[in-house]
Length: 514
Image 1 (cartoon, helix red, strand yellow):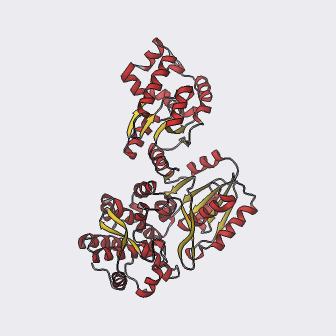
Image 2 (tube, helix red, strand yellow; image 1 turned 180 degrees about the vertical axis):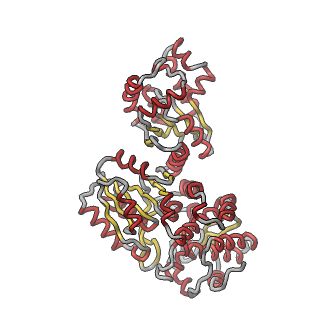
Image 3 (cartoon, helix red, strand yellow; image 1 turned 45 degrees about the vertical axis):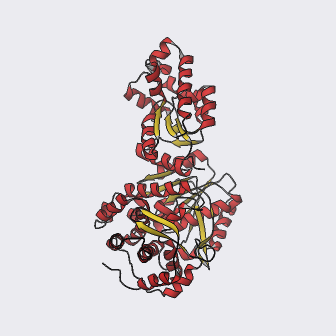
């Protein structure tokens, strides 16, 4: 469950990075940042002086008062809580009742190294913090930290990666770790869960090889995955593998692969024994910025795409950014259609960035930054409407047309390529309805063309229109579209005359205007 409306309290041992991470996280979420120790200093003076002259009991009263004042606000904040606060019973009760607690876990060795560098007075450790003192106090407080609703193992993670993971956790209810090599973070998540784990992966050689490097002792089960094979029969086969492997309700299922893997393995994990925990290591751009984010899982039926599925959040998503280097340029381009979609929906600055990058080789693209921003856009929308009963439909920009083109091609047309066609078609329909300017539509078409997208199709307009009748967004027999108003603003639930839709489908058989 997302925690977007609750105060967030970062807990953990001294030196775990609560203040620096907290300030950055608050900026990312657009919230006020409260550093409890700094509030105490402003009100009562230096902390070491309080301990020396008034004692720890008085300090704990000041601490609880500062925390209570912050939690009294109706506007959710991000709060860095002192290392000893969770061990103080009245404060612990207050935090449990009124905040979402996140434990930033670092090892005692990391703490010792950081404290020696910082040279800040630590009254609970004495003038010379020794390894023995740090370890003893750490172990004494650890049970209280473990009461937190969420724990992130921060050992070895860069501050910006920690912040990104926590921001997605607050918005979505689970972390999204974006890194060139996300396997170390995934390994820590697996070890924290325990030894009961199984890996399901796409059978493509590069992906299967990657899956086997996660933890060599774990069983790896490869599946030949394609969109045209994303059917209930393959879900059943996946469920049979889980059962034959002795998986139970505590088994962690790790999926490795692109969007099809995320859809199919996530659905299987959600169905097996009515739901077992699932994490996904995303290896394609489509999976990183779209398919693995948001808890949608599903497979195709004869009648249409993704018509059988469930909403079920993963426990975590790990974006393996360096996997993009192993993909053919065609696959990267297809993923970029989802990034272009995100930019049209919510971020003119990202759109302009894509325009600047379009003529560069993919090896020179700042992929972590691109993935990060696309994930932020999707997660902020999903957090408002997890079950797609309203605003989440915005994320279907281009998809009513795109899914129909996929089906018409018998899924020989890749999803990303179909979305590119759908973005052009949505722009044409918005133009016809007077919702979108010709100049902005030209920018969208020019960007898609610069990225190497095919924007013309030979598909029969009437046949594609028939395919669209099975779209999930149809209500009471009427097709409903997501259409752009301008770059950075779109509307959902737009109905259009069938004659206009058919005219657009005919225009899609013609070259895109330059």
